[in-house]
Amino acid sequence: CNKKSDEMRGDSTLSKSLSKVDLDNSPALAEIFTQAEGLHKDIQLIRLEVKRLREQSSCMFHGTSTIKRDSIGADIKTRAENVLARLRDMDGMACKLEEKHGANSAVTRIARTQYACLSNGFRDAMFDYNEAEMSHRESCKAQIQRQMEIVGCEVTGEEVEEMIEKGQWNIFSNNVVTDGRTARSALFQVEKRHQELLDLERRIKGIHEIFLDIAVLVEEQGNMLDSIQTNVQKTDEGVQDALFKIGRAKRHDRNNPFKRIFKKTYPKGICLICV
Image 1 (cartoon, rainbow, N blue to C red):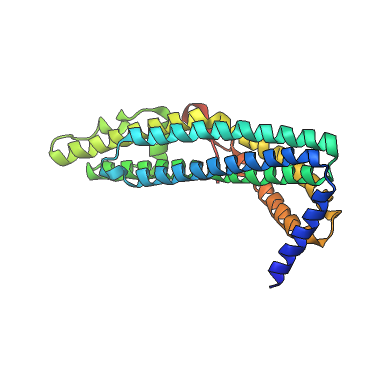
Image 2: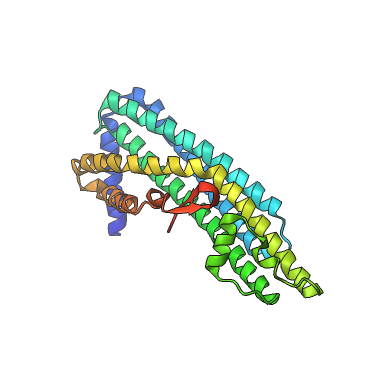
């Protein structure tokens, strides 16, 4: 009941604010919400693609084609590039509205809040994608270790990592007796996981620039959140829920995983996001 009352009070406050906006601004509001709706849909589609990627990766021991993962990765990259470009357009539109109507105007605050929420959603979706790829990478490494044990050549995780980095896959296999169906099958699996790691490396390299752009976007958003919070504090208590959400977004920004993008280097100079 209290929640409903708060929502009604917030709606009343927003309505009063909107009533102060010239009617000529209504097309701008319509455009903001249209852009936001389209962006939200595409971000959700990225999440669905990431879910598909995880499902494909979980089936890697059952003959799932790497082509499917590459196709999903390509779709995610294309959609992410599109979302990033449209977020920049929305940011530009918000800047123009601020110049025209001021930072405290309802239309500007709506535009800024929509941009902040969508940017956070996009960041989280791409972080989930990175996690899915890194999880698959670890699974490939573990499978390589298991298959090498089958042929009597135990290797550590560090040795596998070094083997991946240097691309020297014959370091261990040269000393393995390949006689027998089991040994040949094990080495075949090692080669298969090797190829999957190369494909994964290529996918991450292709989307690396997007990760860097997101890091910049989130960094810039920190200052914007401070500005929004200051402006919201000037309004009455009907928008305190929005203030709480912005504060939570700021805390998330301080833990921005994309700021740590350089802390782990992938083979051949490809940087990944570290958790």
